[in-house]
Image (tube, rainbow, N blue to C red):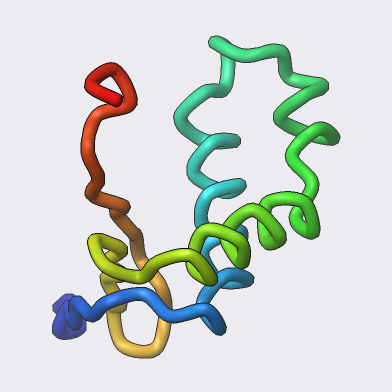
Amino acid sequence: MCSEIIIREGRLEDASLIAEVQIKSWRHVYKGIIDQAYLDEGLDRDVRMKVWQETLARRTEGMFLAFEGAVLAGFALVEESRDVR
């Protein structure tokens, strides 16, 4: 039986959790598609955390986190398409 999923807006202090989930998901989803050395060594947690800290310092609107119990299960950032800008 699954735990209840709680969705809430992201906060600056979530940057570390988001970075960890992003790296884990990239390593799983892109295995065999992206160079394995990059997946193993090129995804730096501190770099990804800094990117998310900068993103969340600018804005938290449109950033949603999904928690299963106390564990971050996923996230989404909703924003205007970069192609439109």
